[in-house]
Image 1 (spheres, rainbow, N blue to C red):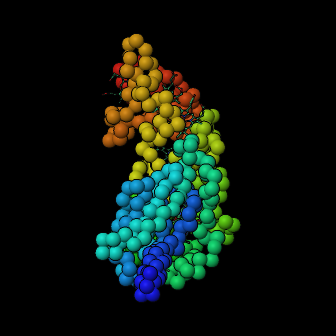
Image 2 (image 1 turned 45 degrees about the vertical axis):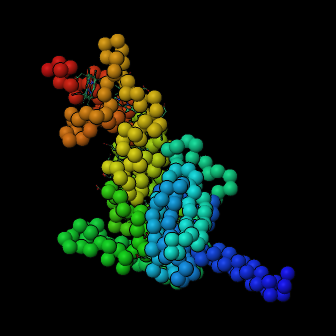
Image 3 (image 1 turned 60 degrees about the vertical axis):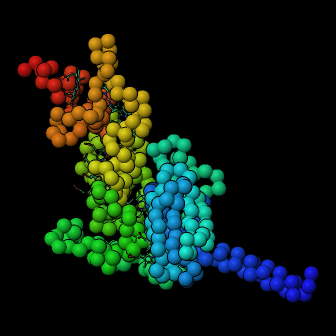
Length: 344
Ligand code: HEC
Ligand code: HEC
Ligand code: HEC
Ligand code: HEC
Ligand code: HEC
Ligand code: HEC
Ligand code: HEC
Ligand code: HEC
């Protein structure tokens, strides 16, 4: 090999090594770390990249394309939805159609409603975002609660005509700049809807922003009527009895009425799976199909669908099987909806 060739090879090697190095550094993940744990369905992400070497970033969750980001500054932040269980999160960077970097991490979303996802698997750990100083984030974000966060505005302001909630929130709530998507569902919970985040999250606690446990300690602080009513009943529903309101209700927002994590029927079936076949109460030789539990109109709550909660109170009742309507016998229950069983 001539000296010229040797030089050429060296340069080639160096160039290769350099470009491999550059490719690795094209994109860096500021947040989240690998193998962290989430309680609910959103993952906050912050990425930085070498200016001018990335024109598109594709975000994939469990192999499915979630979103594409066209970066205009050297840091991009976004929130992506995640599913219960382990989520494989991929960031694929492109420049002129060529892949310039591919970073992968895993996040576990815990779920009380799915038994196999109740426990955090080995290797994953809760990474309390707010327990670290986060100097990098502070370059652009305010992280300490403002006066407004501690004493939010009245809900009435929000419903006033021409109220630009986005602009006001961005200017007043510290939490809004990073957590805006947490409230982007159709059904929003009272205090969260006005970004009164600190009414449940304690900014003086360790870990930072912890909530009281069990949930009843927090929920009953405002829902005093419900507390009085339900605790006075003879029978309290299993999950309510152990103080787990957030097994069924989101404290923030969901796509279902009453901020339920699933529609009522699906929610009940989640734990009472044996009722899913629809064959419920008096499935005998006369009524092989049993009684309908959905897809019919509820005769009492006109305009609403018949569900499990049409006959059962999801929280508490003085009557066996958590019957709704304060009825004492099976036939009194039937009579609530079926006049033909009425003796009158
Ligand atoms: C170079 C400036 C910059 C830095 C540094 C930065 N961010 Fe951001 N981030 C922004 C901007 C700008 C927005 C959009 C704010 C808005 O729309 O109100 C944003 C929004 C967000 C969002 C919400 C995205 C959405 O649309 O829902 C999250 C989450 C976020 N940042 C997290 C972080 C975290 C965590 C860090 C530190 C690791 C960080 N950011 C560092 C500029 C930055
Ligand atoms: C710089 C962006 C940023 C701001 C501002 C911010 N958060 Fe967060 N917060 C995050 C990120 C990122 C996480 C991790 C969870 C996730 O992926 O979204 C998080 C997690 C949390 C958690 C879960 C516990 C933890 O520490 O991981 C709570 C509760 C929380 N934030 C409440 C708040 C409240 C309340 C405010 C306003 C007073 C606020 N956050 C402001 C970015 C931010
Ligand atoms: C009614 C009480 C309540 C209110 C109001 C509330 N939260 Fe929460 N939040 C909770 C509970 C309960 C949890 C679950 C905590 C846990 O299990 O560790 C939670 C968890 C979180 C998490 C962690 C999510 C995850 O996936 O790990 C974030 C982020 C958060 N809240 C942000 C906010 C923000 C921002 C606001 C204001 C818009 C807010 N919260 C208002 C009760 C509340
Ligand atoms: C800071 C006070 C406060 C706390 C704490 C609180 N709530 Fe609420 N909640 C409200 C307000 C205000 C409303 C709206 C009342 C209304 O619309 O009638 C509401 C409404 C609700 C509704 C009814 C929604 C609807 O569509 O009718 C549910 C369900 C609910 N809360 C569950 C909970 C649960 C579960 C917790 C505990 C995780 C909790 N709340 C904690 C203030 C609170
Ligand atoms: C097993 C699931 C489940 C649990 C656990 C649960 N709820 Fe509910 N909750 C429901 C359902 C379903 C509805 C809607 C009922 C309907 O359709 O009429 C509801 C409705 C509500 C409402 C609005 C209607 C009303 O009765 O005032 C409030 C407030 C509420 N729940 C608060 C709570 C609180 C506080 C806890 C914890 C003590 C809790 N829930 C626990 C399923 C549940
Ligand atoms: C998170 C799991 C869970 C969810 C969701 C759930 N339940 Fe339950 N349910 C239980 C447990 C635990 C018990 C108590 C165990 C027992 O007594 O058999 C129970 C008991 C009951 C009982 C009393 C059983 C009896 O023998 O008297 C009824 C009725 C009932 N649930 C109806 C419902 C309805 C209606 C829903 C939907 C609104 C629902 N459940 C959602 C866990 C759940
Ligand atoms: C039309 C009224 C009605 C509807 C709708 C209804 N139930 Fe029931 N449920 C009853 C009656 C009545 C009993 C008592 C049956 C008996 O004594 O044999 C009962 C008993 C139960 C029990 C306790 C006894 C058992 O069989 O395990 C559970 C749990 C239960 N229902 C859950 C549900 C769930 C979940 C749904 C929705 C899929 C539902 N129910 C829908 C009327 C209803
Ligand atoms: C919450 C209201 C409600 C309660 C309580 C209720 N049902 Fe029904 N029931 C319905 C609805 C809705 C249908 C469906 C009617 C239709 O398809 O048009 C139905 C259908 C039936 C049918 C099928 C024939 C028909 O009339 O359409 C029978 C039989 C029946 N119910 C018996 C009972 C008995 C027995 C009880 C008491 C154990 C009972 N129901 C409790 C709402 C109720």
